[in-house]
Length: 339
Image (cartoon, rainbow, N blue to C red; front, side):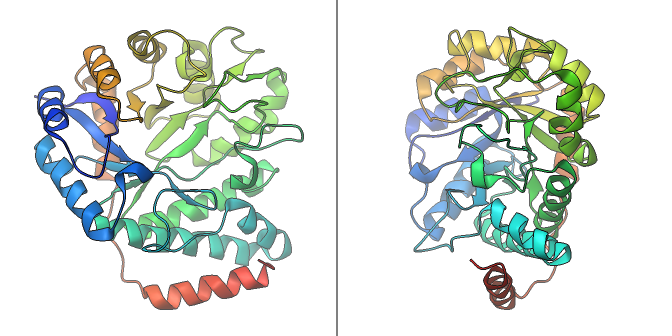
């Protein structure tokens, strides 16, 4: 029996009885952690282990958003603060090789932190290309405003994660950089013409099309589909994400509970699968919503099952790494960047 094609959050720092029963009955493919699930390293490691045991699959992927800057779920006092993406961009502008080195090293250090806990997937890197006037939801998380540089830094990040045995999730495909609203709260519409999007936004994702997983953007691109955001647009998924960009890995939605999407959680879930996503992500830990997602989610099969299996199979073992030396080197590089 295959797991169902969804990734779920949970409510607190331990599993309650209802969550255990839900996981056993509904068989989510994976799990995602947030700050509400995190207290200490020992607690997180125990929670991760319990999730995998409850799922009955020790290879069940456990996800987290650990970018650095203002988006990192693990933080002080138990984990360091890591640089925001814009700092790698600034160093790259001065010395490209050092900018890439810093990005790779930061990701390698993050991977070491995650590996200690049994977390196997980081929702990183971003390939979003912000423009003037866009909402700050991406902002300094981005690696720059030129697609070639963004792709190069994103690649360095994936290399650092891979060296530490952590799988990447490319986001937010096909691009969130132009959005003038935060899709956590309302639906953004981008009115740029198709040729401009292909030259900038989509171009940053194309060199990364070989990555094993990607997360969609809850953004309407009016020149391509004036009605549906990319997450629920069959046109954008088939013609842009699978077509122009050429991404063939596992495609997961951004959080189905975000306010950018309309309809009930069940209706959103159905629309996401109908559009061509392989996997639905639900983050907030609300058990009633989790049940709605599960009720509309099929077992993994066909291409989605193949992509999920290929993604997990692409994760290698962590390579030898001197963490203390790595932290010292990253600090020196960031000082060089003037941070």
